[in-house]
Length: 112
Image (cartoon, rainbow, N blue to C red):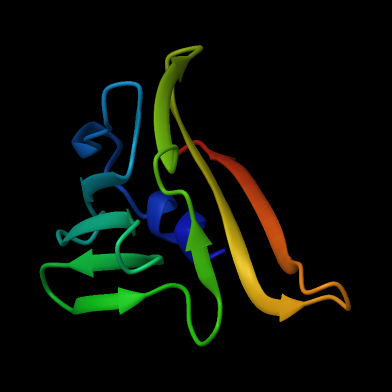
């Protein structure tokens, strides 16, 4: 939800996407700020970095991100810039066989 909210606040003409897929996206906000959304394989976290407000982790506690390599991509469809976010979370719970529980998230956002 937070990722979507951040992207919907983007000034559409300022969105800088990776070529193909990548680990971060940056943009100017509608209120004049600057934001970077990044997925970090080293810390296993997703964070929002704002020039005005500092860094905020969008994951917390025992929840960690798995494989940030395909975190974000952008495409133009019908003249709109479609931003796709794709990641897996390890939720810090194991089943009776010791297998970690994960959730997969795929979302497409069209800022206007």
